[in-house]
Image 1 (cartoon, rainbow, N blue to C red):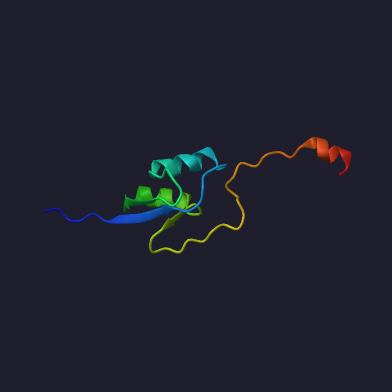
Image 2 (cartoon, rainbow, N blue to C red):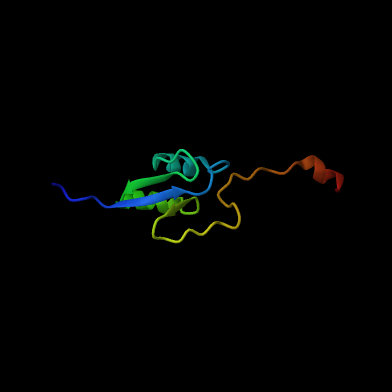
Length: 88
């Protein structure tokens, strides 16, 4: 029989709502569809690179998951000019 291939267990911990399209596409290409979904992924350099890119959204078994303090990955919107023109 063949050798058991090495796999990584990854869980989607944070939502991709408001994330940049490139990050959202990376999460989808890893096969995640729902929050707290766990996937077994092959252990190869391409998958490790994708997991590193979305490390603040995905927890990997055996590595500590540090929840981000502030959402730096979201698409920032411009504030309304009307409110600031009034001086309030």
